[in-house]
Image (cartoon, rainbow, N blue to C red; front, side):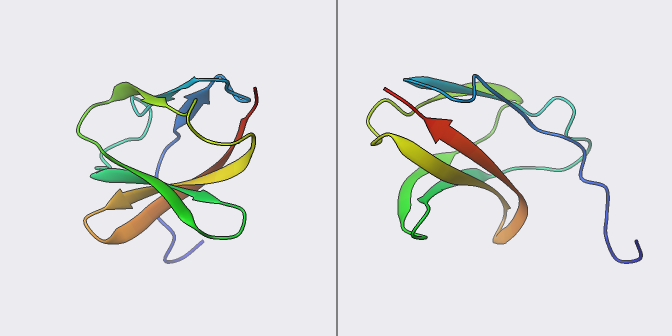
Length: 88
């Protein structure tokens, strides 16, 4: 599609997660991620994580059980959005 750049893929596991969520950006191409913002389904930002690695784990055990949206931010632009589930 014209105007849409292939941003590659982000692997997130395990999903659902209980305490740790591993994010693997090795297949994300040349795209850079500066931070990851986690939102609940009401759109409230519940966590922000500064990012500068290809593979890293995020602690999600402090979040209530439910579905969340991860937004991958490059400077000030949302590059990609993924959904995850946190369980107890």
